[in-house]
Length: 252
Image (cartoon, rainbow, N blue to C red; front, side):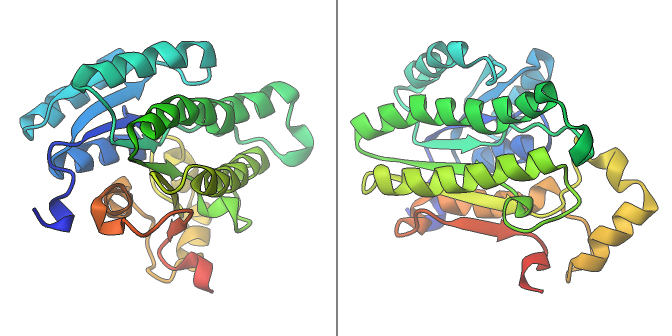
């Protein structure tokens, strides 16, 4: 089996799997041969995703879970692990954003963003990572953001949460080496349900395209290749990296 087919028969858990980048990644992992556990808040959306995954050949398990409810994470991970006897790949794609000007951010809004983007992601990673470490192998890929390293027009709470995730994943890559690899993918502006209304404003769209050498807004599918690569044996000597998928924004 070639390196690029290295996910055949593997088992992957994807948070935020019902829409946007998470959904595209779940389908991309299925295309690469992995069975998929989709974690999201919407059971109906998971059911639709499940049919699409199974139409590609791999098996699918949907788990309704808001990862901000961290007390529910251990049971969800136990169910996911027991389903096919393990998890080889974890992709953290769940995310939240609240678009409030810096002087107007409330403690509740701050917590809403950090409870999903940082706290929930960390404790999901902790629960899966502990089992991967016991099994002696695994690959974890977290969706961060260009906005975690470069100042953009994203909400300040969102930028701060993504910066925290980048450092969190770097730290875990050292703590959990050599058996578990931990990497991140940092998209630039990708059109999803979270930002479609914002991007549909001409001034915002012009801002993004003007900053992007490839001269377009990204799609969720643009992110899939980097995630699948980092999940697979093709990246066996890569850990602790935050791979930017930003159309060239960050090199200017």
